[in-house]
Amino acid sequence: MAYNLLKGKRGIITGALDENSIAWQVALRAHEEGATFVLTNAPIAMRMGEINKLAEKTGSKIIPADATSTEEIEKLYTESMAHLGGKIDFVLHSIGMSVNMRKDIPYTELNYDYYQKGTDISALSLHKMLAAAYKLDALNEWASVVALTYMGAQRSFPFYTDMSDIKAMLESIARSFGYHYGRKKHVRINTVSQSPTKTKAGTSIKGFMDFYDFAQLQSPLGNASAEDCANYCVSLFSDLTRMVTMQNLFHDGGYSTTGVSQEQLDALQK
Ligand code: NAI
Image (cartoon, rainbow, N blue to C red; front, side):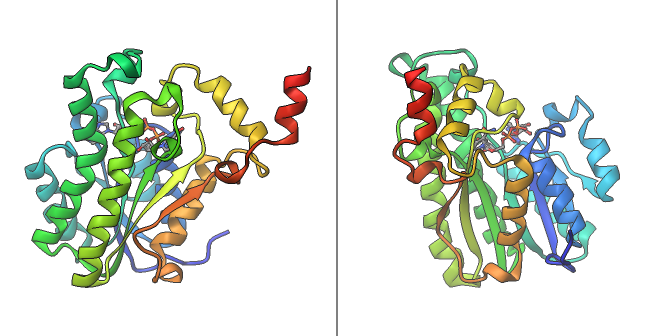
């Protein structure tokens, strides 16, 4: 059901790689709610061409940008404002990649070049996107920025290796920039801490499916889907959540505050 929650709003949505991507679902929902937006991803990710289908469905322009390049991000804002006809009301940061995790390198033996690359792509990119917007004055008053994160930032999960540290940094950037941008222009910046979700980034984690099932049993509401996450992001982009900022918001069916579920205990006894 659509409520016109984003009618008249202009946005930038990063990270839609294929239809499993959380960003893909956010784009579909934002479109249903009346927003116009630009889709962006790393030029290399465009090669798959899947994003063209989403652009067609949502009537969006695609502007490639590597989120580690300040120059490309500035171009992204300038071209987005020109195309959409004004300043931006919402930004989705949905970017994550760890070479250490991809190569299955354990936390105790991390490769530091990969660690830096992962940090640049998955955390500093949020700072760069915010700093470019701040410099260009690209966001409207009360604009809303949401970055996706995972609970590995607060609790240790052996398979999440360097992304735990990187997500902690991402969440900290959201808080720190949230202060400055809030004071300057009432811009809101939050992170959404999502359940395990079957996407390219998610399923590249070793043992992901076992953990997905574990979290499903643990969460009173079950795992939150990408579609559920999209609904939540849309609510955060809307004017209904104007006073929410600098928060890390768990969107995980109750996982983060459940010690152990009866279902888990029953499964152990079998
Ligand atoms: P995904 O693989 O569909 O999306 C990750 C995106 O990051 C891709 O579109 C990729 O092209 C983009 N990206 C990588 N390097 C980039 C660069 N240099 N410049 C611009 N874009 C770049 O996977 P998913 O799961 O939708 O990931 C989106 C976000 O959600 C990530 O931040 C991820 O950590 C987070 N998240 C995912 C969970 C999961 O279980 N899938 C759980 C909690 C958070």
